[in-house]
Length: 375
Length: 91
Image 1 (cartoon, each protein chain N blue to C red):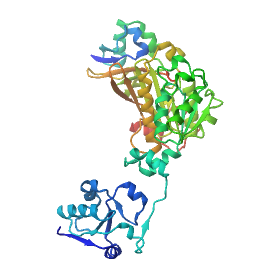
Image 2 (cartoon, rainbow over the protein chains, first blue to last red):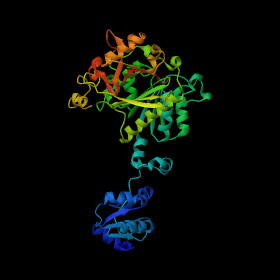
Image 3 (spheres, rainbow over the protein chains, first blue to last red):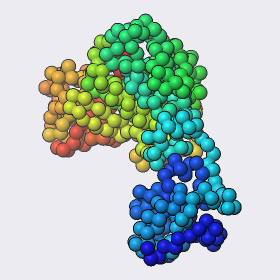
Image 4 (spheres, chains in turn red, cyan):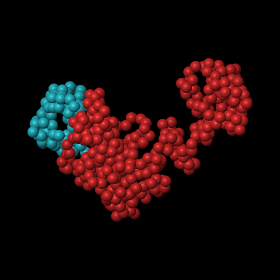
């Protein structure tokens, strides 16, 4: 193991004071319990890939540590082998660091132990972690319609720890709903859908706060209903509600994830007010009702709203976590019969009465026309 | 010939077809070619000779409203997508 110096806690404290770069090769869960101040987390398995990115200069003085020195010895040996010339390994329990007078950091405990256990698998994803999970737990998502589109979405939002889920629906559970509205069950026929939804959500995750809004969304109620939420998932069944929702969401700057279905076809997109087009940009003129036949008339396969509702939930997660590329500016079309996905661009319309140049709610500094030209 | 994608709500006007070939150098000419074979489609897609205001038409992924409308050129490998709003949802 030429090139690797094995050091004691006392020696390591000296190296740290001399400016050695501290590398913690433990797992994130161990790191979250507390770590040496100023250290960088690079779990052992990721050392070959991550360390050369973080520390491109092989002459950089490095001090590696783990729980008791075994994993960091392996990482140190590897680094020496690939050309790092100044590697020290702390061959002692890192728990001695703080009592010996070393600077120690304990990240603020964002989650309870039960939450860590429950959400551990998704917290392993780098884009989520402890901070992302905290965002989900603090998030409030409103589902317009506790029906087919909302069903699949509600289950995954709840299971992933979204803290508050609001349900807007004035219907009761009917037998013909159960073929696709999996939030509801046979023994709840006649029960308000929002209550049935709460029971299903809390059976999956008792921690989720479910707010029952047993009413229809109207022009009078829309701002009161959506105002307290971070994201709205639109699973409505008529054009009136979609336009009412759009205008209020643009005014209050609340993102709306839009899903619609017809027989074997579904569409999904995301409207981020003033960050992309809105529903009125896409469809400036409200179509006649006969272009919007309800499932009770047109028919619908149960799995289709399942697919579309989950794509909507996927959009919600990205909006809440602030990661990835949403469907803002793109309309995704799913054809279940051919199993194809297509997408078209959706443009922000400078003439849009809701979010265009003449919008009463827009920030005049946002160059709508420039964005449209760039698109 | 370009290919025209017919949305589910309009398929009853074209004997159930999902995709139809159409000839013409512009969106308008291609649609006229379709209307000649499927007359019922005209009233569902146009209004007073213009595109109906609640129907979106795309050439590939681009909305012709933001290009040249019915005069937007189409080539042989292009797909014209007719896309009315869909409202179906929860109930």
